[in-house]
Each structure stands twice: as structure tokens, then as C-alpha cells.
Length: 355
Image (cartoon, rainbow, N blue to C red; front, side, top):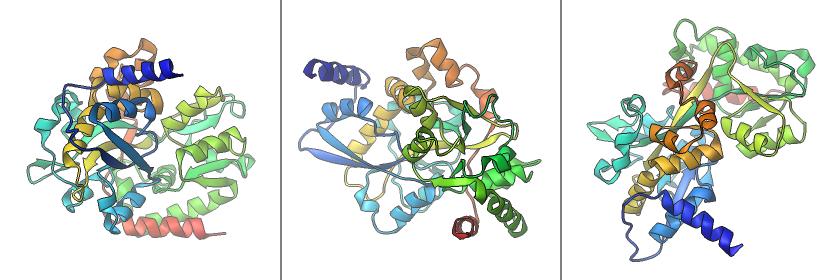
């Protein structure tokens, strides 16, 4: 066991860059991030290099993250991983600290298509680094579906009563809006629905409720629902696909013909953090090519640093769409700021509360 741990540790250390950490006193770096972003397989190396301890709290939605930051607990966290729907607001609301990019040299290796977006930039300053991106795909049990479902509307089929799961998140509103065609001709309309459109979305989702076994809040929860054969189809993340494949569960993943929404996750340092130096080191570590490869191994998400591909097999490059990123990204409507987010949440809460 000791030899195995040493090999894991040495492998993780090999992914660290040349930055030096301040080891004058032991420190704890507190993360509030999406599930899968603090896996021991790659976090141990950073802890060993920097003489620190990393603790992670996993969030279930963008709204949960914002509520914690605005609810007086921002000082409890040093690094957060907001998605593209709230990252801009966090940057402009003073909830994140501007970055010293000279301390994050691997930033220059990141995809220009991602770093060129205005999401985490304000007043000439940069407040976050993109580090992974991906879709909200349709997951299905291949023993229940001989072929991949072609449309999101298949979730409403009567034969699936009590066998569907949806995410307890506004993404389910976006999906129902796609079924109603509100993304045509402009996909950004999903994030700017009118009151009448939101009412129609609510009716559509209420019609889905008999089919919903449970609304999942965490990746592990959906994974368990599939493994326990409680559900056979769901909107999910590639993380769950990866988890289920590792235990040989017959899981399929597809993007329906209507396309799907998706996200670009950023790492940001909270304005209230007392560990900003260590946090900068952590951001640099997380976007380095070797760490990005390790992150992809765990999550199945596509890395923001294309240099990670040099450490991957040809099969993994294809599975992560690094062989044709532009075509794949065209099938994903990346989350944007939702100006009327409070109204969207009202509609979603009404759907959840309905019997």
C-alpha cells in the first residue's frame, strides 16, 4: 500500500509546474466547486508540493453558489468554479478578486476561443480562468433503449412513467424550451424567455412530472439512480457517464437532434479569501496540461488547455472531441447570463412544488 501511494504521489507531482509555494506555515485552501473538481488523484500532488490541505465543498447548482457567496459565507471559500451563466455576474459584483495573470503562466496555453470570451473580464481585469467545458447530454440505459434517443421530447413518452430523472436546475427549463422550439432561430433566446414562454415551459414540465422518478441534485445521486435501476433516462453530465462506465454499467450518452445546453467552468478566487497567493498557485496547477489530462480522466469533461491532448491516447482525444472541437461546440448552446434569473427560479420552484 505504501509503495502504491508513493507511485500515485510521484505521478501527481510530475504534473506540477515550476511555481514555488510559500511553505512558511501550513495552510488550508477551501474550495466551493462542482463535483469531480477536487479528486484526490490529482489534488494530492498539489498538497504535497505546497505543504497545504485542500478541503472541498461540492455545489449542486449555480444558484447555490451565488446564494452562498451573497449569504455571508464567502469568507469560508478561497476558490470557486462558477459556470458561464453566473461567472460574469460574480466578476462584476465584487465577489471575486482580479487575477495576477503573471502568476498563472499556463493561461497562455488555454484555448483562445475560451479566453477570448468576455465572461470573466471587467474594466480591463480578468477574474477567472476557464478550465473545462462540456454539454448537458441525454443519458440512457442501453438495455432499455436499443438505439440512442433522438429527441428530448422522448422523455415525455407514457411508457417512461416513473423512469425519468431531470436535474434540479434551470437547465431543465432550457431543455423544455428547446422542445417547444424557443431556441429557433436564436439559441440565446433560451436565456431570455418572455413571461408567456415561461408559462408554456411550466405547462410542458408539469406534463412531464408523472414520468419523473426523482430530480437529481448531485452527480452521485443520478449515478445511483441508474445503478439501482430506478431510472433509465435523464439529462446528466459526462461525469456520470464516466462514473457508470467505470463500473461497467450499460450507459449511453447522446446529444439529441435539438442540440443541448452546456457550460464553460471557470476557476476564480473569492474577494474575501485570505489565501490569494496559494489560490493563484492552485489555479496555475489546475490549468497545466498534465493536470488537465488527469481531470479529464476523472470527469470526462473537455479540457480548456488543448496541450493536454499530448498525454492522451487517440481514443481519449476522440471521446473528448479534441479531434474536432469546433463541430462539437456548435452542438452546445453554452450557458449565458440570465437577466431574469429570479423569474426563471420562480417558474422552476412552481414546477417542483406541483403535485
